[in-house]
Every structure is written in C-alpha cells, then in structure tokens.
Image 1 (cartoon, rainbow, N blue to C red):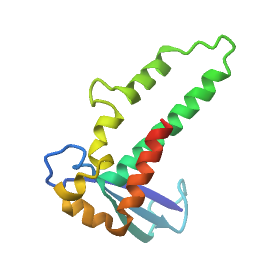
Image 2 (tube, rainbow, N blue to C red; image 1 turned 180 degrees about the horizontal axis):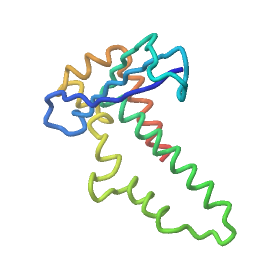
Image 3 (tube, one colour; image 1 turned 180 degrees about the vertical axis):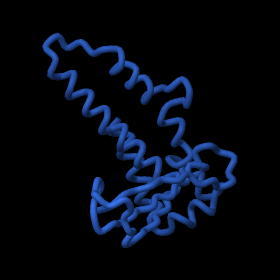
Image 4 (spheres, one colour; image 1 turned 90 degrees about the vertical axis):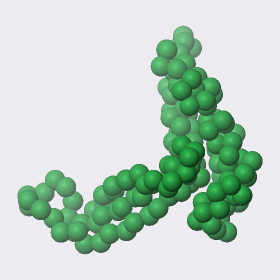
Length: 143
C-alpha cells in the first residue's frame, strides 16, 4: 500500500506564490491499514518536490474538477436554481476578494517574467518550463 505526506518548503522569495514549494513523500508498506499489527515496516520511500508553477497547475486542475462536479450537480436540479455555495465558489475562482482571483495570482507565470526574475525556479523546471506554462494556460481557460 502507498501513503502520502505533504510538507511545505520555504524558498526565500518575497512573492507569496513563489513561496509555495511543496515536498511530497510517498511511503510504501507491505500491508495496508487497518491491520492487526501495531506497526508496519516502510518498504520504500520516494520524495517528489513540486515548484510553484507545478503547484499552480495542480490547484487549477483541482478547482476545475470541483467546478465541473458542482455544475453537473446543479444541472440535475429541475428548478435550475443554484444555491449560495455554488455562487460563492464561482466568485472565489473568478475574482476572489482575498487573493485577487486565479488570473491575478498566476500572472507571473503566464507572462514569463518569472524566468528572468526568479532564475532558480526556471532552472528547477528545466526543459519542461514551456510544458508547465502551456498546461497552466489551458487549465485557466477551462475555468
């Protein structure tokens, strides 16, 4: 069986979205939980570091799935009336009062300025930088 642990990692940038580095640790055990044993031996471990652009893609994809799920839920209602939670979800994506909405948050990645201003992030992406930028743009368009 596999289990996951996420830990946020500070990068030293002044931009809050560039601080969003995360480290995922995957643990593998020979048996699954729950079990009759008090402890299980970890048979393998894998650590994966995600930079802010990769995390942005994951966040936008998750938000897209949430919106699709909510939309399909309210399309089934005969009165076609969405409750307040659905309206709040849409407002949170489009123009969030706290964070300024998804487009404002990820503008740094969409215009490519991070390549010059934050070379460490660009170096971490390597040859896959264009792929991640395109993926983020496509997922934002879906919203």
